[in-house]
Length: 297
Ligand SMILES: [Fe+2]
Image (cartoon, rainbow, N blue to C red; front, side, top):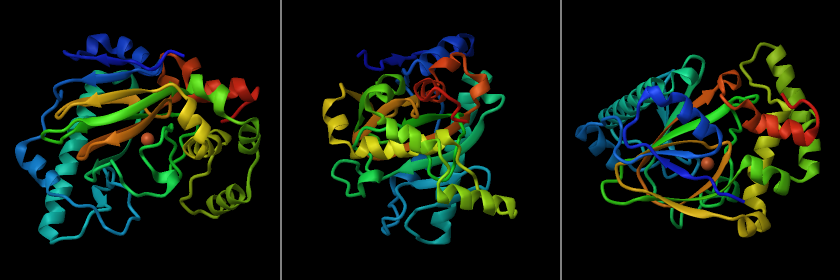
């Protein structure tokens, strides 16, 4: 198995857009050694002073660009909350502007999803197994189904001194045929009670998103990978270090990943429309449909 590679981009340019799309869609990580956009010192200082809400309910501090709203932080004064919101708003805007400049093909119809800030040290963090970041997995969102669209994430390590350390395993194409039990695929193709209730709620006019078979599979596969000792042990893996101040971009629904060490990472998510992919046959939904021998959307 050939592991996903890191492709260093020293001098980003939209003229190479197709090459970047191809690299991302083949499961490579685009790595920008110096951050390609600026986050001013004042905003950095606000972020480095953050603590997370102690309730354990929120895994990260989240910023919703569409509502300009922050959740998951330890409440201080309203001036603190305002400064944090300002810093996350600025990161989200600059990250989105940069990604849209570099990858206009995706940006034409992507949905700009949440941004997040991860102020906690990841090493030794105590979280429920399915929420743990240090176990290899591919991403799937429990409350925001993508129906086959892709999860593209841009990360920035704002730690002033220390690297963020990841482990990467295989791509979806490499691990799904080997580690997805056929029963998981079969179950995803059937509507469960929760899906029927969601459909009913939507029919009644509530703002509830309904999961497709693809979303059901991706969520259960995410859980299965974290819970499978055999997968965690036997999949070939490689450690990747992202130094202080660097930025990287990756389709996290495709490249299996875990975070071993590091604190103070920022992240902006984009949901890339399936129709804008350069290599649609490499998309997890296409691979899954080949495995299932039928539609999953
Ligand atoms: Fe993840």
